Amino acid sequence: MPLRVIEIVTPRADLENVRSSLEEHRPDEGYAFWSSPLEDGEAVSFKLVLNIQESESVMDKLETLFSFGDNYRVVVYPAEATLPRLSQPAEKTENAPKEDDRENTDPKGRISREELFSHVLDASVLSKGYLSMAAFATVVAVIGMLQDNVAVIIGAMALAPLLGPNVGLSLAATLGDLKLAKESLKSLLAGIAVVLALSAAAGPIVGFPESSNQLMSRTQVNYADVILAVVSGAAAIISFTGVIPASLVGVMVALALLPPLTVCGMLLGLGKTNLAAKAGFLFASNIICLNLSGVVTFLVQGIRPLSWWEAKRAKKMTFLAAGIWALLLAVLLLLIAYQHSLR
Picture 1 (cartoon, helix red, strand yellow):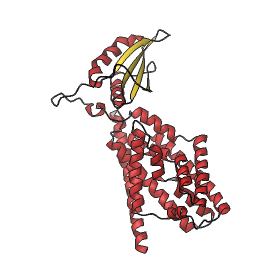
Picture 2 (cartoon, helix red, strand yellow):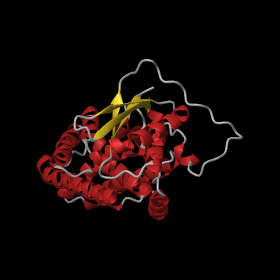
Picture 3 (cartoon, helix red, strand yellow):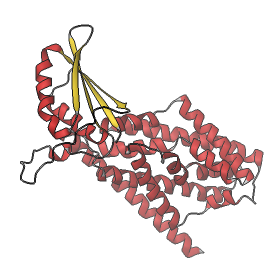
Picture 4 (tube, helix red, strand yellow):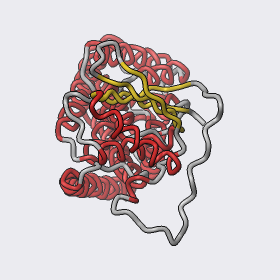
């Protein structure tokens, strides 16, 4: 099982208080720890080695036990292995008294909330690299559509950075983090603008490849596409919260956010607004399903703020976001049913 190291830098005056607290909770969490003085002589570093699934529980307890100020610093980083091996945490009996924060301190079976937030934020921040990847992925996707080449289009899906901001929106709704929501929305809109602009400019240059099955397949939406987007959205969240996100590239391919958006831009550039609207409809359906399943999956995995006042605010934001996405999904299903009736 993957390991994490939690390093706590604390003032020397709090040495015994921190040591006794860590020693008291060690049997419950199964971690090993040691301390060492820092060069300045005014602070002490505690290092805890523990299984990754215990990291959020331990960090939540640390935040509850100590009022971290400017003199404290907590850093989390991975560890490859440790000897001797860690002992298993003490089992809690059914008759053991329940603590008020019991639900928040049980092992989560995933990376910690703080580590997850850092990963998602990195994938959601608007930067030159993000815009460059969106532009490169668009060029590759246009070539793939022109050649009707599945392998090239899959490569474009893997390059596209549009998944990160959508996961950021889902996490922001779950945690009630308005700053993350604004950053993710800004990045998503910027990425969409880049893809649409480049693909629309490429449309008149490459023409309309009517023989491209890959292009024409992105102008249709059916119930199978909705189911695929919902399942892939849940898989995307599990990949982000999992210990080893090896399946993330596969999820990016399954969600297929870039191809319909690229097709929409190409068709807009060619003046084929009716087909462009259908491709845009497919892209919008993927966004809706991804965000709705993302919020639900985060909730199922127990992602929530630690403090009660943040949890109260997050609950309102989560219900609002889930309600909006659910309403949009209902409208989407009605439109699909209407399209089928016309056929």
